[in-house]
Length: 110
Length: 115
Image 1 (cartoon, chains in turn purple, orange):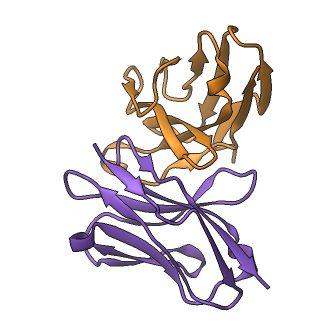
Image 2: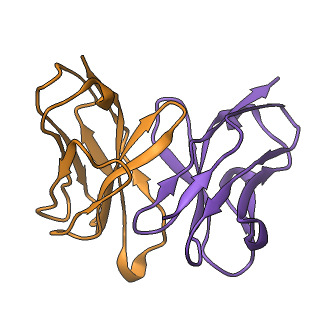
């Protein structure tokens, strides 16, 4: 069965610094991979997704992610973090029964 | 645009009582899902439905049941609530089939406390 691991429970970065959130997955076939963001008290919003093709995908809000099949990873990156990026970030895998990781909470220091 | 509507927003329930969480979408999406979100565990899939008339079990289905009588509604029922079912419940949907872009659209969540 598919599964997702997000090794970092909580990450703190300074505003303007770069960000990388890690995601490792287990999936039996070609993975469908997603990153979602959840602001406090809200539902989840899709940042980006990978189905096939170019392994570097661009998303909303300046985020990007790179699919590395050899490492079973789909890490999320942003070159310069803004205070409004503070939120919980979830990696997910699958299509008909999407599975989520436990999430990484991002704190942004001024 | 309503999207997905969940009700109630919040509920306190005595253990042993039954409860139905309602979910309605107006996007004509084929697939619908119920997740529970618990601190440190992320979102865990309870049940899903790829199309009206069909349902499937997710990661944590025990103690929950669902039905999908039509495209728009996907209620989640707790027949006899237990304290471990205290959680925030999210309903989600997506297009499914050939138009499936993968994106899930989420409701605002229903916070359930079982005492």
